[in-house]
Length: 268
Image (cartoon, rainbow, N blue to C red; front, side, top):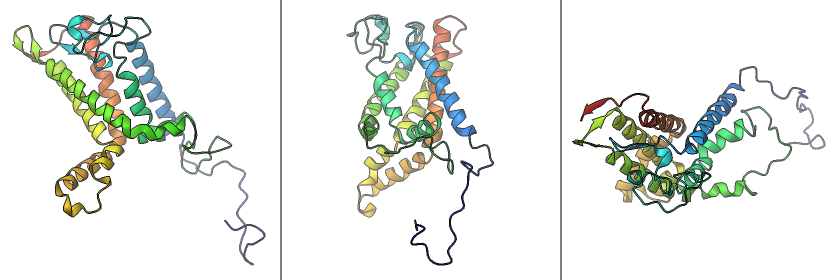
C-alpha cells in the first residue's frame, strides 16, 4: 500500500469511510443461520448422548450412531458389538471412544472452520465486513494450532465409518432371519452420506492424488482423485446433510425403542 509520504503526485488518497461496511444486502443471514443450525444440532446431540436410553431396537438390531460402538458397562449386551470395558458412570457416554474423535474431526474440518469462524467468532462475519477482533494471528497459536491435526482425524473417521457400516449390515436381521424395513433404509442412507462426507474431505483428496507429480503415470489414482474432487466441491453440502441424517437416524431409532410407533417393515 502506498503511504501518504510516497504517494505519486496527482494520485488520489483513499476515501475516508466511517461505516464499518458498505454492503447493503443481508450479509448477516448466513452466519446467523449457521449459529442457529449448529447450536440446535449440538443441543439435540448432547441431550441424546446423555439420556442413556432408547438407543437399541432388539427385534431389528437397530443401533443409533450416537451410541456406536456401545462400550460402557451400562450398555445392553446385545448392543455391544465390541465389548463393554468402560465404567457405566453417567458422565461417560456409551460411545465415549468415538464421539470425541468425531467431534475433533468435524471441528478441524476445513468447511466447519470457515463456518464457525464466521458465525460464532465473527472472524470475519462476511466478505467486505471487518473482523470483530483487534488482533489476528491466524492458526499459528494454541488452540488453533491444533487445526493442522485434521489429516490424522481423517483416518479415525474412516475407521468409525467402517463401524457404522457394520452396524447397518447387522441391522438386516429380524426374529425370522433376514429383514428389511424403513429403519434399514435410514441407516444405509446415513452411512452412505457419512462416507460421502468423509471421502470428500480435503485431506482425503490430498492423500489420493495431492502428492503426485505426473497423473499420466498413475491413471488409477488420477481417476480416484477426480472422483474425490467431484465430491470435494460438495463438501459443504455434505457436512450439513450428514448432520441431518445423523439426527434423523437417531430420532427414528429412539422413537422405535420408546414404542412411539412401529417400524415400517417390507420383509419380515
